[in-house]
Figure 1 (cartoon, rainbow, N blue to C red):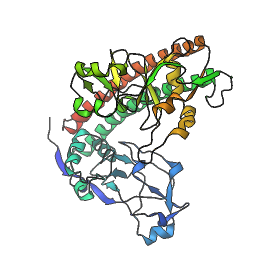
Figure 2: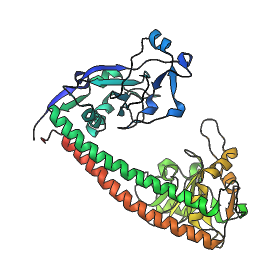
Figure 3: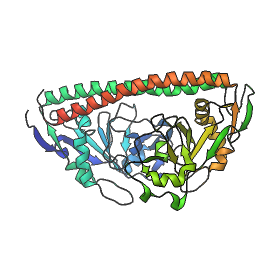
Length: 402
């Protein structure tokens, strides 16, 4: 083990400066591309060509803008998370960036930009960032404080070796994520292939309301019946909006109530393989199936509990139907609210749903289960790769000699 020199970010850069303050009046239909915080992912560049903004060459000169080049590192001083960074790819156009982005151009003979980028994704870096975050309404870090962040700086050849190792690990992670994303799309495309578009209903399936297809559809308890102070560390699970993904139960936001309190709310009981529908958040209409490992739960307000009538509706079919983009467009007219848009439980219950013959729904459910099994196996592999990547970062930025 060797202790490498700790240096400030500012010391490894030929340039470390913020982008330019560009107002709407300064923008042009085309010209010099403006990169913004939305283009910066955590370790990767996000292309948003459809939302690209530009300024003219005249404005570039007038405002004395700093040009951004491919290979520069951009750091977002705004969430989320604050301090995330990416390397600018070759975009075949002249570039500038916004004032909330910091440009870091490294000294080639002192610091490898790929090594720097991996450090800017590490826990060691974000621990330091946390100390400097300011602002109650809009959190940020100043460039001055960003410049004072320290990083371990081994010899350049060691930096390059570290970057190569971490690049390979990150590439494997991204490939695994792409495989999982393709399986997500596969279920949606299989649904359309088997049943057609929910809006046009080209196969002429019978259409009824979601309520008519259910044994039960209900909202969770409101007001004083269920408040944050009722939550416990153990007990009966409470399903909240953060648990509802698109066709995926999100298990990283756990809340419970006591068994005694549950007894007063048991009419809201949700059981494994019931559907929980989110009516607030992104997207406003989304659904997932309660997993088998949750013995029983209750749904919070803004989370709609749906139990299908199994004589006419299959759980997997209904869940995928509700997550079709076309159904979100059908629901769009019912979504309301200026600050927090939502759709009410009664409006959800009134949504139309077509119902193919039950045997075809079951056939689709078999496909979904096989697809989910493949996704589960890939997800397990992804988690192992991510743990390996974190372990490698700890080893690399802890100063171990390679």
